[in-house]
Length: 103
Image 1: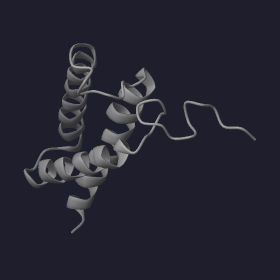
Image 2: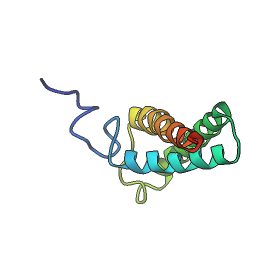
Image 3: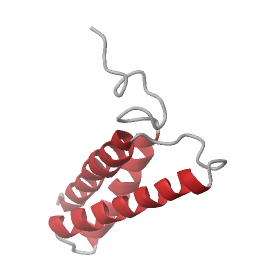
Image 4: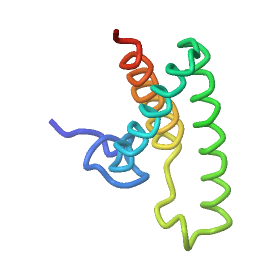
């Protein structure tokens, strides 16, 4: 069975998840944990994190266009909006919020 190119082999910016996915999850995990420790609700936490992720992806798109020497691996839309902004934020912030909720 051959996997689709957007899934495998993992290539930075070209597949749904890439090596940066780990960094994204770790960042959102810490932020979700901290928001929960500040008594933010789950809905508030997720809304703030999705908003932050969306703003970052817009800034990345700007950087890819205007600073190609810095953004050397332009992202496909599925890596940017689904892998980074949706999946990594949900897994990271959600897990961080839930971990902080454990008594």
